[in-house]
Image (cartoon, one colour):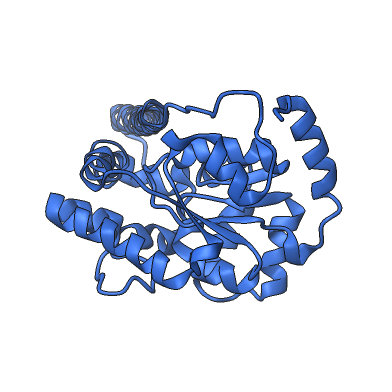
Length: 286
């Protein structure tokens, strides 16, 4: 039977308030970025009721809570109870994309009953997608003036940013991360992708793992999570366009800030120069 979106959302939202902290996270996304994670995030939000975590939660946060959480998480400073408190507080029911997917093994320790969703796609097309979007934006973020403001604007602590380049722990045979592999070229990137997928398969029991392509739509996802299929089409979020707009916005703001700062310095310098010349004209002793 098909259920309307509003019915599913409202009823799942009510049920989400009744679960214990230990069962708060239902689905752990272990797929790499640029594998349809934004569409998957939207879909999970529709059928689970609550919010599905995605990196955009960091980008668009109004305060430093998100940054602080991931910094402490990466440093091993949070207990299982503190992690559960964070996700319960915000009513997150699942998580996909980086940084969440980086630490899928840790989240399995915290939420051992959660199911794992591994988003996949053609590895070569994945490499091209990463290279032309988030990797290109990362390279730009290391070039002035974006490099002066990118950490503040992107909201990522350096400790999490390094995971993108050097990789998280636990990928057998991998000595790099997404960006490091993409910078090394297509062959290295494809190997990284395949190694990542193989590692997830080795780690997660088969009955608890869904190998998911967004093109497959609702049926495998809802069957895996034991949820009714919504009547609406599976979300198709234009992630490439979204990512490019986001980073172009950051680039524009960086140049605007730099221009404002330099203009302020120029005005102040001109004022001081004029003041100095005026004092000399008056032959003042100061």
